[in-house]
Every structure is written in C-alpha cells, then in structure tokens.
Image (cartoon, rainbow, N blue to C red; front, side, top):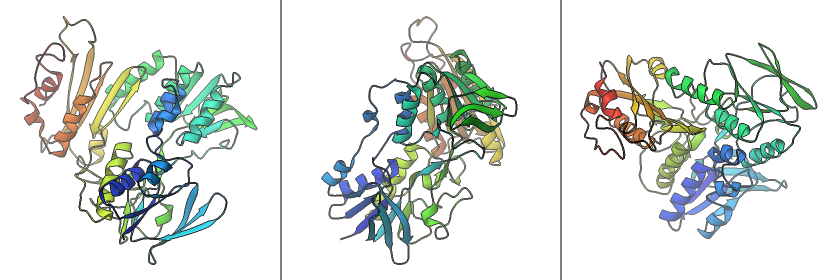
Length: 444
C-alpha cells in the first residue's frame, strides 16, 4: 500500500488529500497540521469582520471528520518539526508534547506562507496583529467589539490591507491606511486603475496615508499610536498587512528554492528532492505570461497545485498548464479584476509592453437599470503582439470577462486576434461595440 504524508491542511493540502482519497482507493494518506482547523477561507475574513456574512463557520469547507470518513488519518495541532528526506520519515510533536513519526513513500509539503512582520518597534504591544488564520480573525473581531477602540491603523494597502480597511470601517471605526507606495493595489494594477480604488476608499471615509513609512508603534502595554516619517497618529488597534513569505523551513538546505524561499517545483509539483512535492503558497508556479516559474500566492493556485500533486504522488500523471495569476477584489461595491502582467510588471520582466485602454457603459445607454461604466486595459508585447495582461474595473459585475483573457494568455493569443473575436450582443448584457472588442481595436 502506497503511503503519502501531507504536511499542511489548508487549501493546497485539502485539495491534495481529497484528490488522493477520492481517486486512489487503497492509498494511505496521513495529514499533519499545526492548526486546530482545516480549510479556512482566509479570503473571507474581511467579510466576517465587516459583518457581511452571518457566521464564520461558513468559511470552512472541510474538517477532520471529513477526511476520517474517507479513511484518511489526520493529526491536527501537531507540528512537523523535522523531516529526514533520506530515510523518508517525518517527525512531529503534538500540542501536549507527544512525539509522532511517520515514514512515507511520497511526501507533499503544503506548509503555506507566513505574514511578513515589518521591522519596527512596538509590534509586541497588545492590540497589534496580522490577520491570516481563523484565530487571528477571532482576535480582531474581539478587539473591534471594544468601544474604547476608535482608531484602527492598517499597515499595507495590498489586497488584504484594503479588504480589512473596508471591514473595519464597516464596524464604525476610523480607519487609517498606511502605504509606502503612492497608491493602493499596485502589484496587480496600473495607476489608472489603482487611483480609482483610492478614490473609492477616500469617499468611504478611510484616511489614506500613502508615500508614508511607518517607523514604529507607540504605547505602554497596549498600542496607542503609529509613528511615521510624517507624524504621530492615534491608534488603539493596528493590523499589519504587508505581505507573506513562503514557509519553507522544513526543506531548508535540502530542496532548491526561489530567492524568496519558495520551493522550486516542476509542472508535476515535484521538488528537487526525490518523492517530495510542494504545493500552494510554499511553492513556485509556472506563469504563462512570464513563460517562467515565479511566485503567485493565490488560493486558486493552491487548489490547482494540490490536485496535480495528489494525482502524481498517488501514481497518476498530470502536469500543470501554468497559471496567469487571475485575481479580483470588491471594495464598497467597486470591482476590479486582473490577470497576467500589468504594465510595470511587464517592463520589469524584460518585455517591450504596449497597452490599449477603453471605457464605456456596460450596456447601451437606454438600459437604465444595472448599467454603469466599465474600464479596461489590455497589455501586450509590442514585438510579438502576444497578450500579457488585462485589467478591468466597474461597479458592474464584469468578472467573467477576465477568464477570457486568462485563457488568451495561456494560449498565447495576440492582441490582433482579439480585435474581431466573435462576441455576442444583446442589450440586456452588453453593447453592440463591446468594450473588449473596442479595447483590442485601439491597439496600435
């Protein structure tokens, strides 16, 4: 009987375990996780904190019992401390201190990522936290219940920081959003889009402190303020949201990694160590836009990599087609979606990027209900004409459109091929001169 040990039970580990247990009967699966829960949808934390969903229990889609019913073996609150890759054995310790060891035929590392903590004084003060795990959400929720907490600072204006800023504002607190860059969401979008989100945040009453570096947190026992290079601001709670780094400590010195520490894997999710796979936020992914391996930490990528590793570890054969890093965000009803590379990322990657923009109503002007402006940008390589990325923004739900561009990037479609793409028209849905078509036609 083949024995597969999986270290980590969130999105990637859950997908890997389900794949094996559902498709390869007779395979023994042993799952380890240091946490007390499985499959928490961290992307829903802001919805819970902002009281946009009723119950945080809705953010779990699997459990220990779920895997046991499939004849899997699950060790929760059990942290893997060491792996002997030559002897093919995992050594772990329970919360009570009991030691457990398991040998394996195949090993899947799904250890995820760790929040990056800024190197500033005051992080150990009460009321300061990062929000990733379910328990972090519980702490944040409890802090916001305190009427003495009136000002909440969020450090970092990436996806998580912006989402939590909205959530905290919905709880009636004054929110101060700090970011060293001059705009929010600069990783996935160009300034023509990020500044639109800045305006949405400002209009909602969030205090934006861009181009401002946090130097430290003040307070005695409990945080009371945020010191930046431009001033001191009151804050009875602080959320750090400046990003994540891969948790690859277990394979340190054994498996090859990217410069940021993510395990280098091939399209079968295999590391450079025989019989060892890496999936999710601890691993690299192949970017079809870059045509190279990189690091794109998204839940969708985690699930996809878990499926691939599960099949391969259990004796099947599957390769990743690569990813585009498709993503989206909705803040106070304003929706932004993107895939592939934005203009700056394309330039950094060595392309000669060009772009084409278009803006129009989603539907004909005579449609008065559920209609509004849509903004779109297509980024392409001026030499090969290959599509590299797309960005869209609107109060309308235009999210499905980004899937078209994701597939176009994967299939190396040129901007010219998109110009006369067969897109249907009906006033209930779109314009006769579709904004996708018009953007493509605008390419030089």
